[in-house]
Length: 351
Image 1: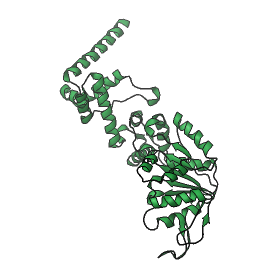
Image 2: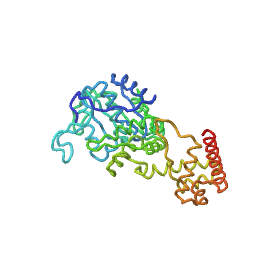
Image 3: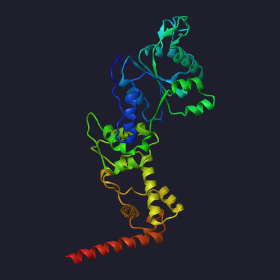
Image 4: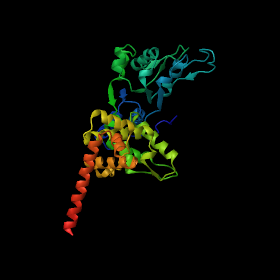
């Protein structure tokens, strides 16, 4: 438990417009005491947002409450506390999490998982600012700021009868929506740099691996990205982390995407592109992310070279890997040969 008033070391890292706007909202909203509902996919940093709101005005304690764990016969006692001898095994009076958060902030993580019977009791806390511990006749008065977070669409949960409409409106005074990582990919290099920090070893990621990370959509968002970096550092002594050190799902996604891009650029059909993606082709080495994107024609040429290297010059197999027809591959190779001959003639004339 953090001491009262201690600023928690959290914050959103990034320079994208979405994150700059989000930080400004948090700074402005955090100074008040109105309930806040944070929505976002898993791994987008909902607890980071909640702690940042608390840090804007760190009074009392920040008490996180995992709603998914409030199950079974003791869930009400965990939240509201209980009187001595309230039930078998209750030898002493216990303060609940809400009482611990008095004059501070209670963060209900994944509020959509809160059991329906506890939703009624939480509504009373929001309305009356009081509750009665299990087995007690005395009511406890509290002044708690409520911050709730969920990955669910609570409007749909209300419509389905799984979440109380009156509680939803009490929580939804101010809403913060966190963007998924795929919508702010320009922040990935900065996040990777932060996650690469290690107390003992120094790690550097290659441009090829970084570009692959930027291409990937990260369905698990920031949490998945951090787990990826942690895995790479655990499995390798460094100092360089390469494309081949990435998790297999990231490698497959990037190779499949590159295969479809090359098939489309080379004139292959939809079926050929799918075949190329299924077989998988080597990811061409790209320039540094900070220096822009490799031109498509150059990307195409490099992919063909990689495919020929992988098949030891077998053009039929290379065409199959790329998902294009053999005739198309021959035509492309003639075009590249013609470009090189023209460039060589120009160099000879200059001499």
